[in-house]
Length: 78
Image (cartoon, rainbow, N blue to C red):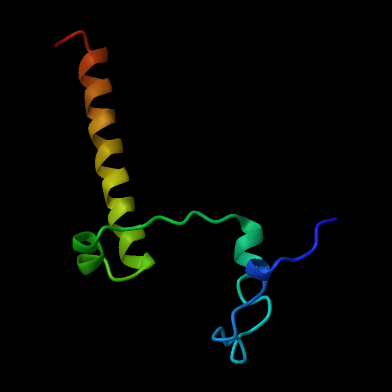
């Protein structure tokens, strides 16, 4: 095993006295997917609920469009 070096130690300015051990443990166990939004997008979509809502609407629109295209193409018309 390697010894902890000076750079491996916590800096004194870090204060975790108000932290809660295991706060995000269950969510992390289920899997996480962190996405960084660019500032202009983050300005409009303030939280994960807003982002998820917009993405679900986009998925529905894309699904509807895909269904229309498949129906149109399967009827023999172009």
